[in-house]
Image (cartoon, rainbow, N blue to C red; front, side, top):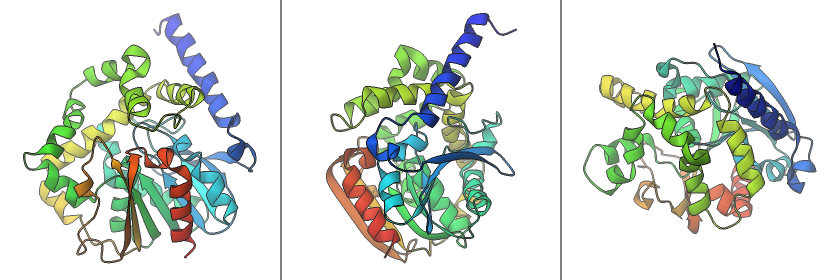
Length: 320
């Protein structure tokens, strides 16, 4: 039996999430026709927001965000003549949250992307991803090249670069300590909830430029994190990825195919979690790499720190 206080907390979280969906305080979002809906895919029910008309662009958020990560890019891309789809990835905010850890493996998340593109009526799309969204975008471009027309990656290394960095002692292994902490049962969930979600808020409040995340923004993130099952689901991304690496390393290496899509990398160089040396993928892995744009004053939260610059880079790349 669920305690009455827990039910009240869940109901309050749901009410706050309705605010996320239908109350947009930023003028740029308020001035566009922002539509939201659900896509029933084979493995998950995915919530998304959509704006604009034209060639499709799918924006994949990272950890621990949700579609709202792209609040400053959605209006700019829509006004530039692009149809923007920004989903809550599996396990986040209003999307379904399966319990099985294996259902968060990157290949399954990449399959969600391919199905979402088809469900929204296209065969191919431009794809941009930040952090975990970028990791999924890399995998999708390898596994489903027919679905990814152009690829933009924000502050996440090519999977081979990341695997190499984690396989040897060094600064990156130390920077990635939290990935190993997340392998523990229940303790990571208790940790991220403590102190009014201090663990999740820390990067927003300490790493990003002042003002990049407003108090209203943080309230929206708290509401998304407070959805029943969301904390475990977001952490399961790390559990699923490392467990697969440990159990099927040979298969994982074999899945690292060439990315044929034209590719843009945008990298905030004040990233506390990922070394700047990881930004550029090997040309053998990404033969159609177009540019690596390094933004020296931006943190890991690059699209928040320099929203106009990132929007302009994406528009130029996707409309070229």
